[in-house]
Amino acid sequence: MSKLVIVGTVAFDEIETPFGKTDKILGGAGTFIGLAASHFNVDAAIVSIVGDDLPQEYLDLLTERNIDISGIEVVKGGKTFYWKGRYHNDMNSRDTLVTDLNTLADFNPVVPENYKDAEIVMLGNLHPAVQLGVLDQMSQKPKLAVLDTMNFWMDSALDDLLKVIARVDVITINDEEARQLSGEYSLVAAARKIHEMGPQYVVIKKGEHGALLFNGDNVFFAPALPLEVVFDPTGAGDTFAGGFAGYLASVQNFSFESMKNAIIQGSNLASFCVEKFGTERMVNLDRDEVRKRLMQFKALTQFEIELN
Amino acid sequence: MSKLVIVGTVAFDEIETPFGKTDKILGGAGTFIGLAASHFNVDAAIVSIVGDDLPQEYLDLLTERNIDISGIEVVKGGKTFYWKGRYHNDMNSRDTLVTDLNTLADFNPVVPENYKDAEIVMLGNLHPAVQLGVLDQMSQKPKLAVLDTMNFWMDSALDDLLKVIARVDVITINDEEARQLSGEYSLVAAARKIHEMGPQYVVIKKGEHGALLFNGDNVFFAPALPLEVVFDPTGAGDTFAGGFAGYLASVQNFSFESMKNAIIQGSNLASFCVEKFGTERMVNLDRDEVRKRLMQFKALTQFEIELN
Image (cartoon, rainbow over all chains, first blue to last red; front, side, top):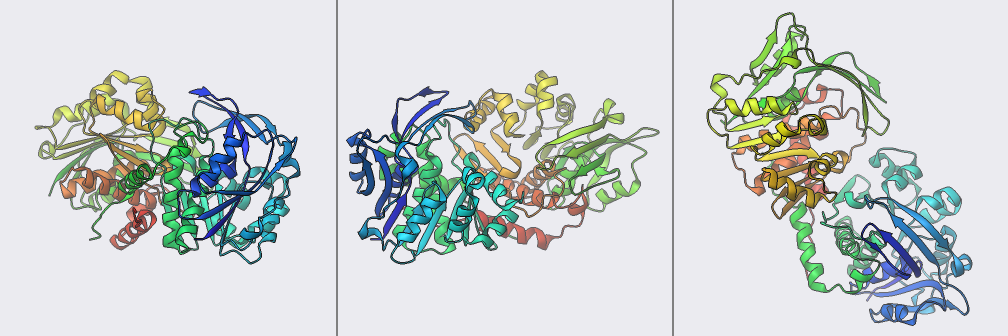
């Protein structure tokens, strides 16, 4: 079984949407990535930091899904990263109401000894210096390193970000971020420029409009499943990344064809994530539901056309 | 060979984009629909109105493609509908600088006698009363009636619009228009409400984000081909509709599977339309280019996934 190292936040989220609001619930990129990756046959470990205010049941929820948490540092007397946000009616935009970094402000990730030879590294959205720190700790170059990042780091830590971009095989960002990073409006041109920065594969996430995979002249597009209700988009991008990395770790095949399937698997899992608040849908998701919806994805996109 | 009646403007367009600008050139929904439909084995006729200021070469350009123009009324001393617009940098929004209805203000469409038994009617974006007038002239209910419309008519002529919607099999509108017409944000819910208004098939155009086809619980998604340069989006929606209707007229099969192919054919032709100003790319488009790009569409979306 392949080892997958995930670095990302394990956090408290407090969420308001037009459908309701939550108290402080379990969230964080590392959490969503881990839960999504746990749907595949993979030995995943989360590297993160929390305070001792995080309920033990949240950590148990991860271990019950065979996710190794020995790389999650619990700071005695420390407080866990906390984010509070409110989504607008269209669910595509949100206001951040509170961001308390807490223990995350001093996060020095430590990759557990027995995961330093992991085949796959998934760098969740964090300061690029932290992401570099994880790559530096690996005892050998991973077979595949996947980077998720965002515009915030382009604005505030571009030098470090470019360093980590140069060292990964896959980058996942949204369309606006791809434009910002490349200075190109066309996503085709943007992907080409980002290729030149390092990653062989560029995944451009377009939320409700799906995702594009670029690899040289090869392009693949996966739609988002049209849903009756998007209840809470929190974690959808991380779930996509976790499904993507988890699938690839399980098949250990990094060809373009395999990446296409990884994009579909990520999109499929993300379509569940948004149906309930926070991690609620992801922790109650069984294999039959996942399979059934994969078939919906096939029906949504597959066609037979005569080229006469 | 099936007959296809197209009603829509034949017009002068004057276009500014970040890439340059044109003089008055050939445009109009009827023109783009006709040019796209002419790529299929179909007997198409355009019903429209122009002034005698429209150069004869523009009409010749249509007849050379075997499009019947006997339903295009040429008003002596009249002026042709004229639209001037400027696209913003993102090419997704535009300002209308001039709209001179001219002869279009008094347009009473007359379907040529030998097209009154046409199997397919494509109602291009026009006042819904004009669209109803065309349906009323058909000697028998067409096998398929396709309606294109826009928010302008929802605001200014909703009663007539609802009447024509009730009489067509397919409606093509964009995502914002689907939301406005239905009062539903979710496109799944919007399509369901629009089904209830009449059309069995609801096609939701999302521009660079592709198109969705709804038919009861069946959903199909076709992406737009990611392009290096979108030079001029004018006519892309009409080209999509023309490819859609032209394909269906040629195969005379109106099943969901056939509609899927029609969506792909429409998307494929629209991807060419935006590569040059106005109709320039469409009039210089050969079969091999069309076939080759259809294969790109297949490559863009098709995948093989094991459901284990």
